Amino acid sequence: VSMLIIDDFLTEEDFDIVLTAFKYFDFNFYAQANLNSNNEHHFHFIHFHIEDWVVSYENADYIPRIIMNTYSKYSKKNVSLIRARSNLFVKTLDHPTGMGYHQDIPNSIAYPNLHTLLMYMEDSNGSTEFEDGTNVISKRNRAVVFHNDSFHQTITSTDTLFRRNININFIED
Image 1 (cartoon, one colour):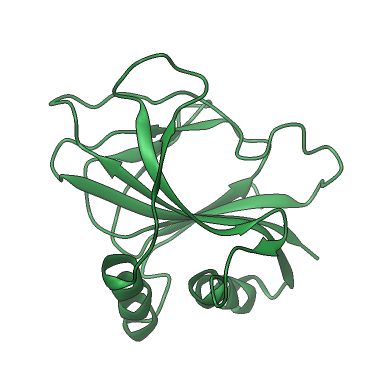
Image 2: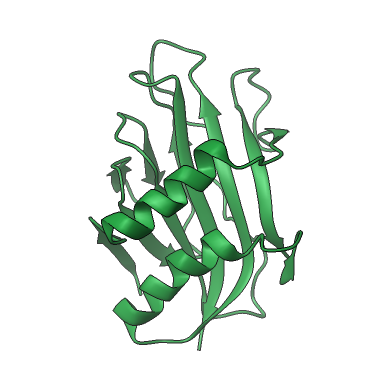
């Protein structure tokens, strides 16, 4: 997989389950300053579903599994989930800004089949920008899948108060 962009990724029923969970479940979000930036506007909130192969709490893998079951059917490959997080970005500026290029799991040489799936929860003018110049706009029910080696960054949105996505790191078998 070099990069896949899949619109209308989940069925409407599954997307509604994921969106409802994101909006109404009692997710604990933790503030995270971007490690490769000292700009006070470069932060977001994270909810941890899975960290280092371990499910964070009972049924924390429910939402990531809905997403990855769809991906497995699409790709016809088995996947193992390493990490899954829900991200919440808050509009703090009136102009879009890049939040710093990174790899989700740095120095992942032991996992040559490590990939990232980003699932966007709403339409916005925010995006994910890749070092090669590719820019994937946040669109409701859009998934983008790429190899972990790809450096990418969040571009903040200016037309929504909140921009949300689910970030899943996985190995394809």
